[in-house]
Image 1 (cartoon, rainbow, N blue to C red):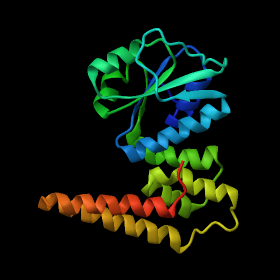
Image 2 (cartoon, one colour):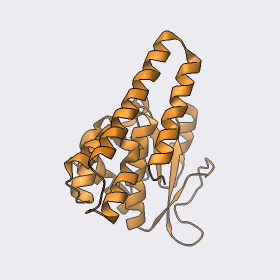
Image 3 (cartoon, one colour):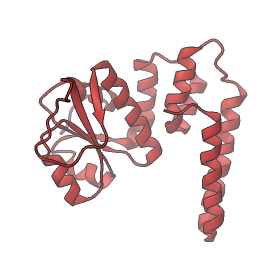
Image 4 (spheres, helix red, strand yellow):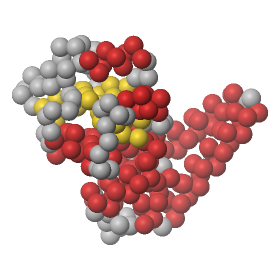
Length: 211
C-alpha cells in the first residue's frame, strides 16, 4: 500500500486512526528494530495506547484493553504460518518481520521498510524531538539501539550533555569490537566471536541508560 508519508509519519498515523488494523515492520536487524519500537512507544504514549507483547495468536482478540484503553498488539515473526494467523487477528497490531515479508505484503497493507532507518532517525530526532545537535544525530545513526538513552540524556540536560569525547570513544570501541567479531567469524573461531559479542553487550550495559 503506497502513500506519501515517511515511515515516522506512517507509524503516528497508524496509531491515530481506527480502520487499518495491521502494520508490518521490516526491522532489518534487532538494533534497527529497537529504534522503530522506540518510535512506536513514543506515539503510543501520546495516543494513550497500551502495548501488549505477550498476547496469544487468536483471531478473536479485541483492540480494547480490560481498562478501556486502546490496545496495540506487538508481534515478531518470520514464519509464514504464524504470519497468516497474526494477520487474520482482528486486533490492531504491528508485526516485526524481515525483508521477505515486507516485499510480500507492501502492496497489500501498511508496511515500514527498515532499510530507510537513516532518514527515519534524522526525521524523528529533528522533526519530532526537535533535536539538531549534529554529533548526537550522527551517533544515533551509527548505533540506532542507543537512540533512546542518548536522546533522553540530551533532553533532560541539554547544556551539560557530554557530546565531546565520550560519544566518539564509545563509537570507536564498538566499531573495533564489531570488526573483531567479523574477523573471528571469518576465521571460524566461534569461541572468540562469542567472547567479543559478550564484550560489546557488557560495554553497552555499563555505559548507557536502557529501557
